[in-house]
Image 1 (spheres, helix red, strand yellow):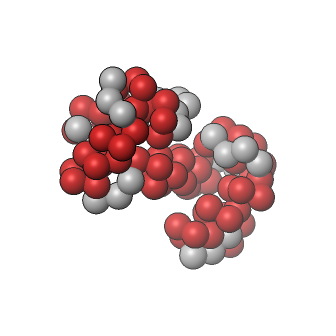
Image 2 (spheres, rainbow, N blue to C red; image 1 turned 135 degrees about the vertical axis):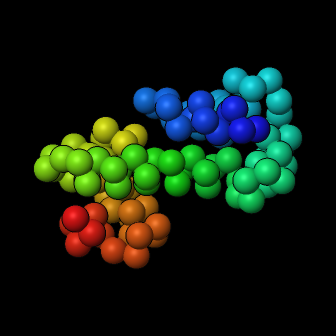
Length: 97
């Protein structure tokens, strides 16, 4: 599981939980159980956290517009990015920056 988590952090584009299950050769439910056992959250929640962390790092390291950061981090649109960022950070990306 550790190797999988490290590979996920280094990937430019994050897969969905279902695609990750296919990639690893296990069923989605098996992947979910293993994540809960080893990480404490579902694969979907972990992937959401990784996407948030990427966005947070981009906010720290660049002066790019919020919409550009959203797209670079893998969000489908800026509204989704703002909702997710607020969920994890407690504030909007603009306030956090």
